[in-house]
Amino acid sequence: DLMAAFFFLCACLSYLGGGQSQGRAWRPGIRASSWLFLASGLSHWTGIAFPLVLVLLDFYPLKRLGADPVGWFKGPSAKVWVEKWPFLAIALCLAVINGHGKAQVAGIDLLYGLTHPMEAFLAAAFYLRKVLFPTDLAVLYAINGPAGPSGLTPGAAALLILAATFCLAAVRRAAPLALGGWVFWLAGLLPSFAASAEGTIYGQDIYAYVPS
Image (cartoon, rainbow, N blue to C red; front, side, top):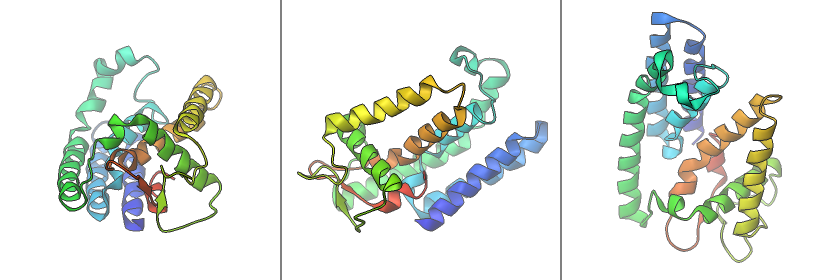
């Protein structure tokens, strides 16, 4: 997991470094970033949301995507999406391989969290608490158990995550890095939200390594 986080961060740095250059100088950064992303995915699957992270980086701090989403698919901005196909292909392969393996071995559904959003909010609140207050550490946590480690109900967890998102969005002009970091963190945790099974949802501290 630490190795996956190492390659994930190296891929981000490579992409950011290339983003400071123009023309052909940009392509080596793209290639290096895609190979590093593959290395991260082969180490552990939790970084498969990397293409979404790249879009966030294109928006801020690279500012390759403007403030108006209408213009994201026109003119120079269109190239941003063309550059993402190697990353999307890698992410899709990793998702299929991991999804098949987890379904066969543990009955885990990769899309479970997306069809049960309240439990995804509960997981987000749990990992937020663990990052800010790393106490009562354990190898495995029952996130949605009777006395969940986040100490919140699903409704309260959803309210907390949405309130934090709206507050950061409201001050995005004064503190764009705060909103970017928050969305980056949620995107990095997305695989752990999504992959689960009916019943008790378990969490581990290792899932927060990459986004944090």
